[in-house]
Image (cartoon, rainbow, N blue to C red; front, side):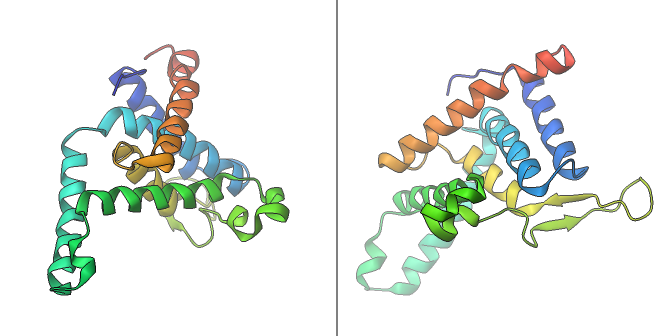
Length: 185
């Protein structure tokens, strides 16, 4: 992977995405989209092809191989583990596209365009601030951003190409933000 951001820019974007999500700026749908679009390319730049990716792939492969072993002589036990992991990441990307679409598009695309990170996906976090302030981190958003960012090179075919192009687009949009906002990166 060719890096478009320095390590400092990656750290700044991750902090910015966390603060946007945690402080609950703006409407849920817009806030979640902005946090996701900053976090995913930062995670891809910062952690892809590193120990976190190897650990995650190893963990998923272990679970899938255990299922294949339990299947015994069944036909499905012959499935290629790496392709199954890539397909899982690709399916997560398809889900995420639905989340990122405007609700207005649901007239043509149906319930897929009404998916959201925020429906009961927020974990309240105690923190400083006025009583009754709502601080939270959206675990669905961060799970999708982390898995897509770390495992973005695994899916193959049309979905894999679309996903890598999408993350590359987000990367090109987010890369100049740290220097523009904070003078670093």
